[in-house]
Length: 335
Image (cartoon, rainbow, N blue to C red; front, side, top):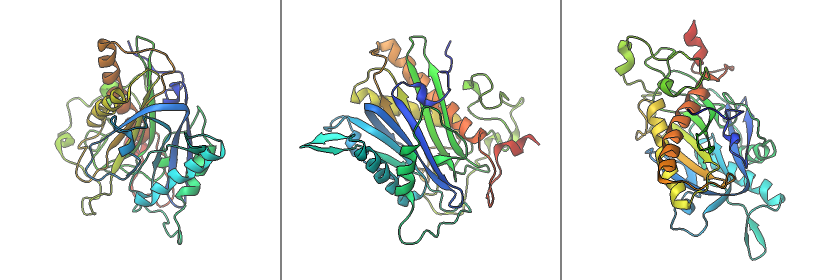
C-alpha cells in the first residue's frame, strides 16, 4: 500500500528544496525547485501553447543530461525572466555546469498565463520576474507553502482559483516520488460545479477534503467547463515537476515525464487542449541508490500519475481568497 512521505511535498525526495516568491498586487509569482546536486532530467510537453526555456537541452540525445534547478513562473512569456534570477543566485554560490572555468547553472523553465487575473501588470519597462526568481531561490527550503503562492499566486481554473500544489508517495520498494504543479488549467478540476475533485480516487487520507465522488454522478459532470471561453488561445497552462530518488537514465526520466501526464488527465477535464501549455519536467536525484527492475518501473510510472493528480487537486484545495479575485476559491463550494 502506498503512503505519503512525511511532508506530503515534492521535497520528500531527498536532494530537493523548493522556494516561492509572490507579489500580491501583481497577482503572480515564481516557484523554483533547487537540486542539491545535479539531477538527471527530462521533459514532456503535451499542451498546444507552451512557454519554455532550455527544454531542448533535456532531450536524451543531447549532451547535458543533468540540471541544477527547475523554474515554474507566472507572467506568460515575461515570466521566462525568472530563470535568469535563479541562475544568478546559483552562479553566486558557485553552482553550475563547469565549462572552461566558468559555472553555467542549468535552469530550464516553464510559464503560465496569469496576466488577465485582476492583478496590476503595469510594471514599467522591465517585468519583475527576474527579481522574483532570485528571491524564490533564496527562499528555498524543504518546507514550503502551497495554494495561493509562488507560481500559483494568480492561477485560475474553470470557475475556481487555481494554485500551487504538491504531494508525495513512498512506494513499497522504498523509492520516493514527489509532484509539484502550478494549476492554471483551461479545464475543471472538479466534477461539474460541485465540491468533488476528479482526482478523488487517488486521494490519500483527507489531503483534499476526502469527499470522494458524488453519487449519483451529477448531470453537469459531462458539461465541458472552460475558463475564459471568449479569450485568446494561450491563456491557460498546468506546469509541473515530478521527481524521484530512484536512479534513472535521461531516457527513463523522459519516460517518467510522459507517464506523469496521466495525472493531468485524471485530475483535469478537459486537459492537453490547444489552449493549454501543459508540461511536465522530471527529476531523478538518485539519492536512494536504487535502480529499477521492469516491475519497479511500471509501479513508479503509475504512482507518478497518481501523485501528480493529487498535487493538482491539493493546489486548488489550498487556494485562498485575495482582493480583486476574478474567481472564487474551492472552499466556496462548501456553502
